[in-house]
Length: 77
Image (tube, rainbow, N blue to C red; front, top):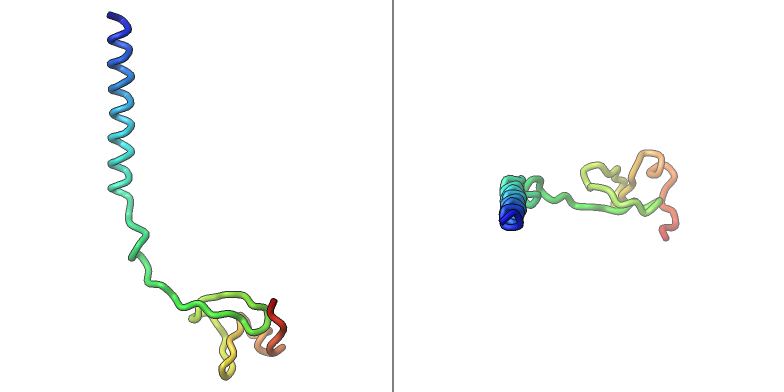
């Protein structure tokens, strides 16, 4: 009889844990659609990938910072 009670308590505990886990997954905000995707560009000097909105432009070349724009294109690996 005591084994039946222990088994019942364990099963109830597991059921509550699974129920909580499923509920927390449903309540979690979706990462898809939270922020729009940004275009990524590559620095002509160092090869760093960065969002196009943060890039420094000079003609058709894209740089990650003003110093790299001043130094000009380099050899990207």
